Every structure is written in C-alpha cells, then in structure tokens.
Length: 93
Image 1 (spheres, helix red, strand yellow):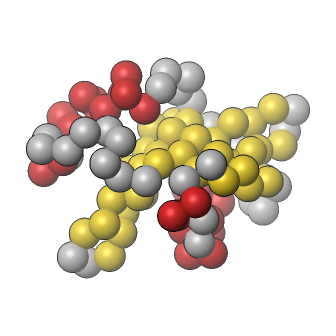
Image 2: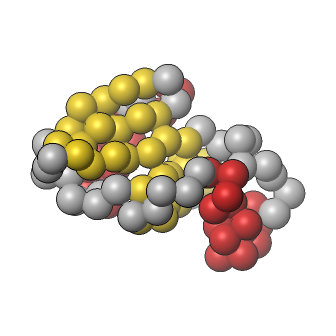
C-alpha cells in the first residue's frame, strides 16, 4: 500500500492519473514538481484538474477525491497504482 496525492488529467487519448507517492505535502506544494515533469501543464493552476489523496493508517487506505472523479474506472486505477488491493474506503469531497 502506498499513500500520496494525485490528479486526473484529461488528454485526447483518455485521462492520466498523475501522482506522487508517500508525500505529506499538499497539492499546491507539489504542483511545481508536477509541472517540471509535465511541462504541458504549466498554463494550469494545481486546482484546475480534479484531484485527491490516499492516506494509509493501520493498513487501511482512505481515498479522498473530488466527486467528479468518483467513477469506477478512476477508482480502479487508483487501487492499482497505489497498490491498495481493494482495501480502501472512498471519501468524496
């Protein structure tokens, strides 16, 4: 199980889940690193894309996310990328 922050970035080819593992910093603090890795995002603010966070406490994950991305295909990708193995609860915001 991994924890961290993520954004769902829509692209012509579909959507991409951009993430950082094991980081307790906020989305705003990490955005410059994301933009350095994905320069095409430079014209956007960190709040432009729907986002969320995975917290792991005592072996149980809680996925906090924007209601716009509370969709089965997105949840499945979060489960896979963060190695949650179905052991999580969803907290939409």
